[in-house]
Image (tube, rainbow, N blue to C red; front, side, top):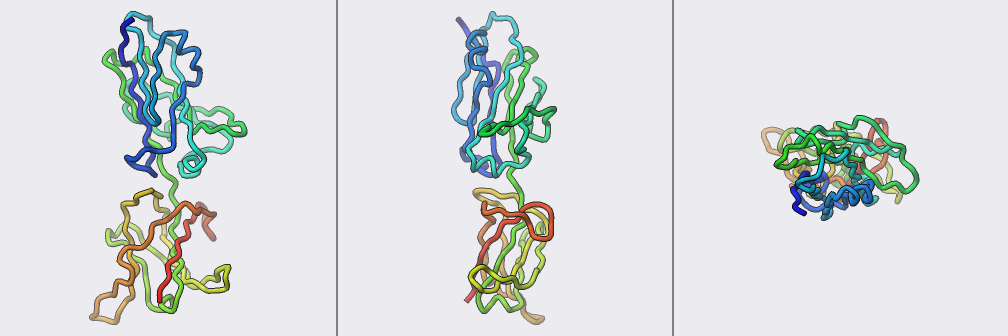
Length: 242
């Protein structure tokens, strides 16, 4: 029997970028695919569906995107009580969780990020290439600066001038020390290899330029918690000066 590639699906997660993400693609009903002589091949975040060249158009095919717990916590739009269902049309080249048209109930231990329902009958005879793009969680990045230099005229800046920071003053730490908290004014997307580069500076009286204390600060991590005084999440980053 001769086959043709009807679907070439790729899943990309913004936290991992072009690196492999801890996700996998699974057929929602493998038995139905087998009975319809549909070939399903998957390798982590890519799946290919092959159809017999002479077979009649199949009914819509459902594929589930499954995730390890660490990926679930880092995916924007994941819902604890519902599984988003996406039904992109055959002419669609890219889709995401924001395009969900309905939801399915989520039970305990359900590892699905979402379900894709795909109408292969309407796809181009040359094959359908589709990418599912998952966005990473964004959080306020809060730098907790400790040490004697924390009391000085310090600030965090974004050399690209995209993210602003506000000085929240001193806060106590669990070990009894105090830290100066400088937090972004808006959420910043988390990434395994972030593209943003922030700098810790000490300002000087005019006409002198600021002194770069830490040219590249650590990036926000996955130790997320509710942001004090605001909606959303906060990533705490600890920096020590002399």
